[in-house]
Image 1 (cartoon, rainbow, N blue to C red):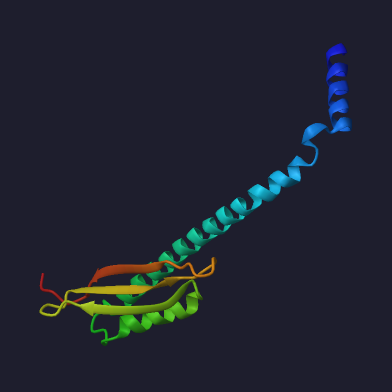
Image 2 (image 1 turned 90 degrees about the horizontal axis):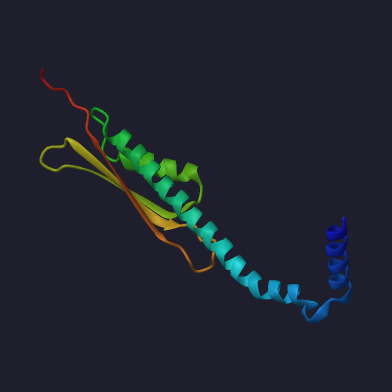
Length: 142
């Protein structure tokens, strides 16, 4: 009990006196807080960029799935990707899709979706470009 009472007495004296460090905590917080806020917003911006990448990839995969169907009309993939981007919200700003098939032998389809990530920090947005590939469905002889 003797040791615990001594510790309490020392702590009480320090709290009562304040000493030379009195008021240092608010000053330290004022110095560190801008750095904490910058790191917080940077982490949110990186997370938004990853969501924008995921949205672009899902739109490209959706476009490939629409364009690779047997006898799919031209532009079906681009239309499906555009509908996906409209339904997904504004994670991808200015999202554009382009779906192409191989020119001589249309057995492969490629869709590319590009745009910019939503900006959390004013003036900062990252480019996003995702591509998906697929094989066009067709009749073959076995």
